[in-house]
Image 1 (cartoon, one colour):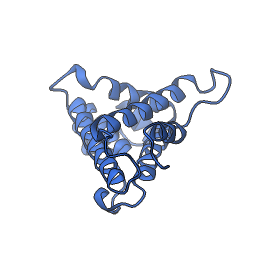
Image 2: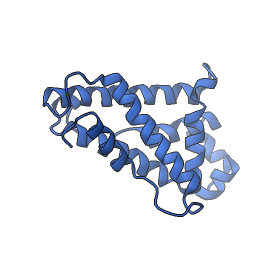
Image 3: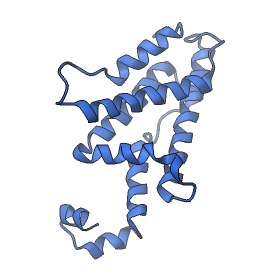
Length: 170
């Protein structure tokens, strides 16, 4: 908390006026990073739902990478979600993951309605693979950027390739 207060240019006690604990601060940080934009159309009414999934995942990538040196901390918290049932951060991350999966599943169902995807595609599996691809590629970028020669795959390109493998029209 002291490092955060120093970076913000405020007293450590001032940070505690807004956050009861380190866990509360971390939970708010994770929620900020992983939530979608307000004011958009309901997922069940969106045209080009596969493009919306790609945009959503690219936004997650941009939000995490915008944290710079702290991006690895957020990804670390994400990866430890299953280690504690009572941890406030883990509960928050599970909620965000559930919301993200629901959004993507709804968009996959919409894509099936619009014939962008075959009707046989399993929306739940597709949503889980999309999130796994996204966070795996973000982790790759955070871990290897600057340390490995050559470009890393973008979330957008990987998701579009995955959707084409499902016989999608993207």
